[in-house]
Image 1 (cartoon, rainbow, N blue to C red):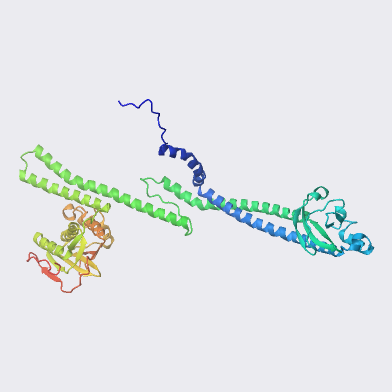
Image 2: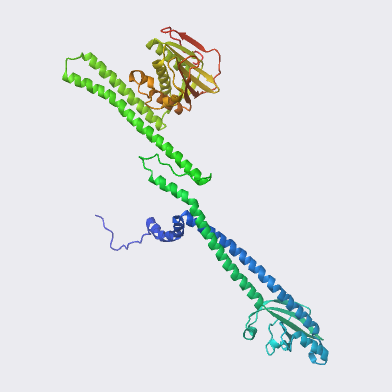
Length: 528
């Protein structure tokens, strides 16, 4: 066994892709946890949460915008008042008032400033050196409120935080306006401050009311959504419980249909229609299995009985009769199994797998010739060029089954016809027998169906011929129906198939009216 050199050090390998994926899974799992929780929550929870979240977003946005507008509305008057007060004081700032040489001007300045009594607005007059020349009684002894020194007749302002008034007034936020003034050649600044305590209280009160009202609205909407969605889903839950209790043996159950024409009621009706289709399909399947078992049991029982007779009484009958019986019953059994397999292929949609051009007029003429040779019926054949695309074997089986059915029930006459009509080939087979009652004309195409006047197998067959016709015609994109013959008693079976190409509809149809055993009509030259 080869070994690695001891002097070589192992080279570290990169982690494999599965290891990297395994390391990435915890993060992916964590990222997907909210999505999984949301998916596991029911429709009721998701609907309530979505409604509450959307409403909370709308209420929060609206409340925020409203509070901003309210704050501006209640603070703008404060700014206007402070600006007016500052401008009045600016007019009163004169050299005589500041120097005290003009008692009247000094008295007016002190009244406007509020040096003797608090008038609500706090005013300071500050010189260029930052010294407070005069101030309101509430601001006496305090340094300048702001450091701004605008030019003469200029103004600035806004909501400010004034720490110097925190301890004295207990309020930090003020609307402050600074206006530039001049007394002689010396510049001054007039500072006017208005408290925002009232405005802030109003805004806080409005915010509290909006918060309480918003919470109440969210709770009310959440409860209403929970209740309404629960009531809306109640019929769905009833449908689920009903469907969950329906088994394969009791498909006759139906889900409750709520009143109205909304999505839930339409869902209930759709579920009932689906259950009805399943029940019909199950009944047809059970009936098909029972009938197939019965039909298969009959030839097997015949063969078994014949074999038992031969075993117990070897010389009771001629060997040729026994061989003929076995041959006949085996052929019948073979045909029955072939028919069942063909119907199984039809159920799987596997018919008409071969597509080739088929002349229906030639098929009909051949079948007419076969009937003349095999029966004593009067067979009339009328053909016109009619070419279709399909499986030749299956289309031959369609024509054969229809003609055999007509020959089995005809009193003395069978009429075969094919023509082109509106882009379709119309093939009709009629007989002058007892006909098919109107109530049975749809049921005759079901499997193992024999009419009451033809229940014996010698005349009624196995009951699969017309079912094979319906399946094969449907696989070729056509239709088949049973109706009255129109002229006297009898039945008419009409098959419509799409034409392979636009064949001209001509009146020069070939008419072969034979009373029985006449010459065989050659295939139509036009159809070739």
